[in-house]
Image 1 (tube, rainbow over the protein chains, first blue to last red):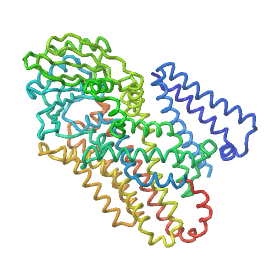
Image 2 (image 1 turned 90 degrees about the vertical axis):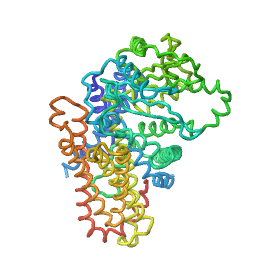
Image 3 (image 1 turned 90 degrees about the horizontal axis):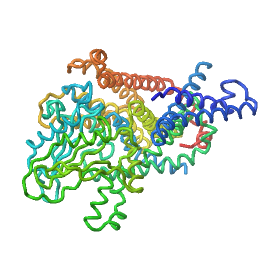
Image 4 (image 1 turned 180 degrees about the vertical axis):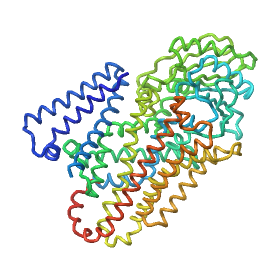
Length: 92
Length: 525
């Protein structure tokens, strides 16, 4: 079972979702992104997460796939948050 | 809703924290048990389960002749010993007597290792505590879980801006930082936190809500049918009185292995061994299936003939089986177990940050921070002992495992006593020291104990870290290195607490009055 691909997808999914939020756009990029960009980021993030779910379910079946998806996304979201915190600390 | 969240979280928060942390480490309880029995060599490969089952069956015939039932858990990827229990003549009428022991798969003899509960202690403490009747403990755990469920639901409602604030963390702003940390830990793990609390209640639902079952199933036959839906333990029934040796258990296990695949037999249970009415159930292993519903093959114990195969239960029983399995996570392979562990660890931190936030929020509003009111002091001290103190106590349990002499009369009990003695000492320490120093000192102590544990292991056993690494012993190397990782975590927390104390003492006074308006508006704790 290769966990790397679904995990990378979860991670990039949450990164995209994070940059689709106003506060993070201001804090990290310094200005709000255009609404279209924000929309695309949100869509891409959601798609990446769904793809991760699809891969896990296809490989492991619904029961274990869903459990793994829940684990992957929880950890990935945590890592994205930690990265954002680290970035904010470095800038300051 | 906000105050409901605060008080539901606080009232049993210390119990919940202990349940969360001991539950978290219980995902590795079998590994901990291996580490705590260092005399028992690791299995470089899983022995033939059929042969092992036969060996232990013979040994149990010697140890417990005439028992009405025995049951063994066979060695697998995570267990290097065979755990067995058997019924004995009850000491008091109306009570059921049990004997238990761990057996060496290579010889079938009782394990010649130090007497310890191993990881099983944390696991049992997680839902029934200690020093109290099991049923009381389980009721307390149920009440705590119910409070947790209320806290989760009210927390989601209080939080409101879950998606907007999903990635928000405001560093260095004291109360807001705590709030953001608490929110992040809660929201990221939310599916898990909700699942684990709800399924935790499901595991003991028959205890908490027995009435439906009592009303629906009245005759013994119906009750027996119910228990067959829930567990692979077959009920003893009546012996015939006619002696007949037990047929080959190895053959039965072999049939099961053919059906379910290599190493995939979990448990062998025999009722009335040595009697003509003996029956044997061989249950499927737990790996890879998200359900605790019983799957087993039942054999006639005297002739060895296959009586029936049970591989499915009714939809209601299966629902319970799946929820039960989700809680225990025993179907997990190593990677998934780590995911369980990490997210559960986030849950522990969620409860911990919640508890600390109660004091952080109120400290700024104290009329005189030097002399807080009784409730504040109580919560503050209990927080120290139940968060930092528990780390020390749990590590002390592992220290006791290495330091207590063996053999020693009721050694396993003394390991547990050591855990509680140390825990009480941390409470006393928290009561006599200023709060901030107590935090820093206890976190440092936990860090030091964790850091030194692999060294202690190297000096007191034949399995030091370098050797484990060299031999590829993942259990010993993993636990030793995990101790260092946790030591690092505690050290960071200790340093931050100490540093913050140094900064905040002079800074506290001018800040004291101004932020009241802000804090009361924000109050989403």
